[in-house]
Length: 424
Image (tube, rainbow, N blue to C red; front, side, top):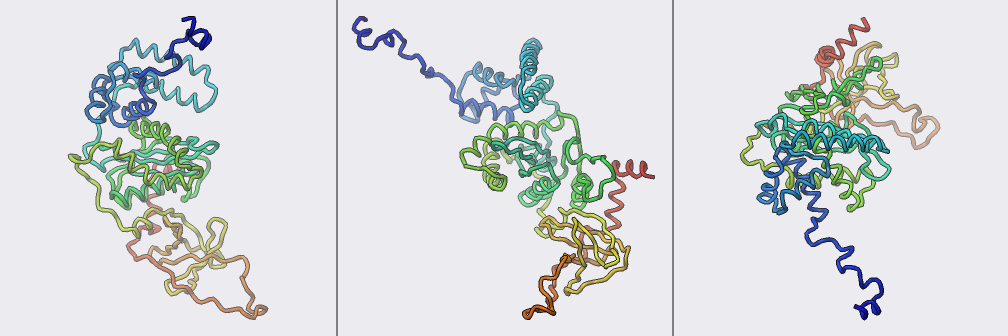
């Protein structure tokens, strides 16, 4: 011992394992998998059953007590948790809530408090693949200093993520991109379930134009495809999409950092491959689950259906105004068509951002922007050439843009009926 002290000094008296993790320590990756799998795939299992499922289905062999400790460290309780345990956890969270320093931390604590009050699953999954798609958009700091809204859709029966799209705000465009992914990859679903507190709720801040009424625009697109649309503010009804948000928030930050994702365009590109891997890992197997998705529409039909419709009026210069620009109407031969001042026009902004105009519910034209100045002068420029008429693509008459049908649909919406009564 004396020789050891002479050779190593005071370090000789320290245990050789000091500072080393025990061999039985569960790795961070395993802990993360245990949490994520419970949130997305096995959330309605008690912890003893979940421990068995981890070993049987996922090849993760850890003890029941370890599973319980890991989940409870995230304030996830078993459906069989006692009232006493729930009270203890709630007291810890309330104490932590009082010392929360950021809104993000406060929101996370509040979500955990709500989850503890609702530890039991309130309803079973739907019977069929495609029967119900839960949709939502969540703001989050996905990369340092940038908050984006992740628009998501998840199939209720299988847990398959059917669509995902980042936007800087929660927008109709974001939900249309998710809808496009569903229609392209799977087909036409039976029903959407959305959050009543999102853009699907009509904002009653003055009389908004039709193109700003997100709910009506999305609902009209659903109507053209025969898809039901339902909104709910009840947390239990949207449990799967909310758990999906939590899981992706815990995983994508690390994945983005590893992949070098720093902007929203790269993030959306990354989602294409990542969601496929995510579904393989967390979604239920589709065999044995009957699909009720209807056949995928053509790309042309999707483009014309996921549109923004708004009414415009022809002015004295035979033009219409949209987004601070003036447009003349061009027919299929590339010739300008003149309408009387006051003529009502249904202006359509298709999913690919191309514009169309429908007049009298039968005539379809392509709006062409009127420049504020000519590019060249026919009198002063020697190389001036008269522009040749451009023959645009005109959709067939089986389009969903008839003004009378759209206006009837708009005024049948409950929030618009209320607005009409107030303005009467």
